[in-house]
Image (cartoon, rainbow, N blue to C red; front, side, top):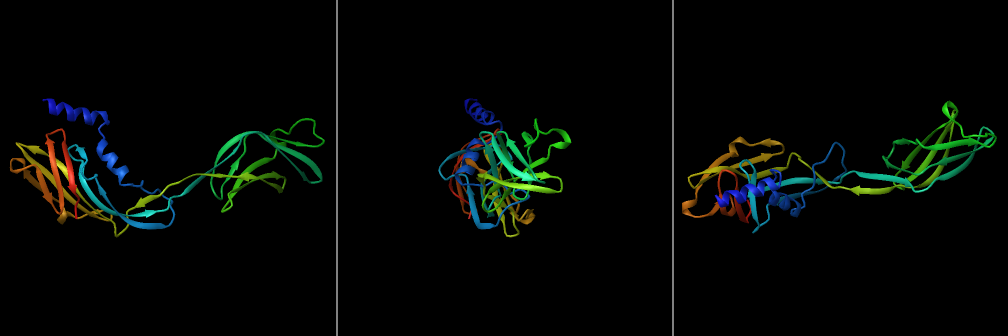
Length: 254
């Protein structure tokens, strides 16, 4: 009863997430899956989880041990531009001098896209007040790569005035992974225990497709010892019940 409570607390504290497994993923430097856009292929990498010698917990249906190969891609970069204080720009259009005042802002910038400014004043030299409504021209901010230069475009009539205003900063560059045709995954999944006999499922995937001929379930009798070997993997079972299994991996799948 005491051992069951310990396992239950470990699972609930993680919100039904395997904490040790999450640590193993971070340790193996697993990258997030790529979205719809990503950069060039950097390398193919083989990942193994969990860490050798670390006590790990898995619930029924969770992966205990895994080896897989995936393609690591350069992620997309995100940019931001900010003005900490108001900036006044001066120009001339259709024979009239004007001033444009941009108020403090911080916006996400995407290469090739235009951000429409919302907070600004535009005034011709002979105006008593800043323009409003239809008399106020649209103002856009755009970014140019690779310089990351941000320009302000003021659309007046059929023309536009352009002012360089600064440079955007890179917020992050994230590497990500994709499942390619040569990707593979091998894993052992905990299936439960009955009267001291532990059930473990073995599964293989090529690309995104499971290989049914290589998906099998095996049983191991703990009365014959707590160390289990399968396809090169070696792991010691610390305890197992219908809540989960606690184990230490000593060697990963070949």
